Image 1 (cartoon, rainbow, N blue to C red):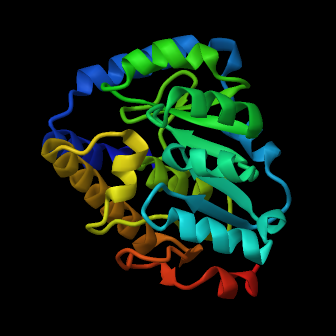
Image 2 (tube, rainbow, N blue to C red):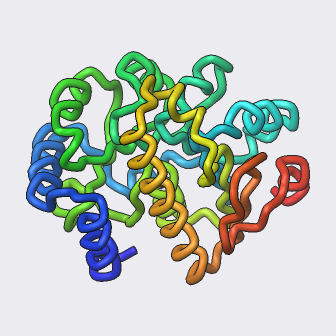
Image 3 (cartoon, rainbow, N blue to C red):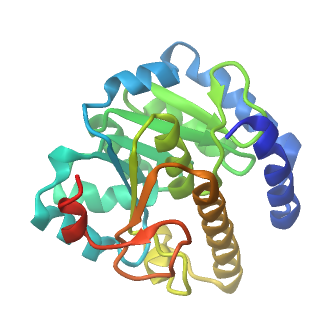
Length: 258
């Protein structure tokens, strides 16, 4: 998604969520400066991808455990490229599963993200006004080179492909990287958010309200993306709402298509 397309969407998100454009820009400048010599380009990221045309994006929703189990049983990991939203990385570490790319705004737990950065091909780290402290404290502890993304207009080493939550940003990124099949797993956008509360160790009414709003925006962006995409889009999430434009299917059926 070009900045000209993303800007009005971004400004609406800022208005709805009460964010600060100035703080988002400040976070972007901090990330850009801190990455400096270790920043990846999108072309370098493409070179890391093995030869397959299928990206699977794992979110940290309530269906994650079931979806990972089916993914393991069908033994298709060598046929796909795995994108993991940071909240799902703990489950991948526990199962000792390969993670190719981790898309994160650094709220998935410091130790988990540090260990994940050791094992993945690359991390895609996002800057926004609310994670400046994390950028400064955690970024230097991560391994490897990093592709930086921002919510505001991109500049320097920063990119903005569109997207709001880690999961839907991973979808926009996988499109830019040229995958022909894009698959959602563990991507629940309905009322069940118990898994999220476990991941982040909090469950108050304000947090629930904010989380639901973020998930709603993420789902809306995925449906907006699907309305213009020419990719083959699938959703193998065990539970959760239908996402328009993403064919609801199963890992078992997916295995026959890749």
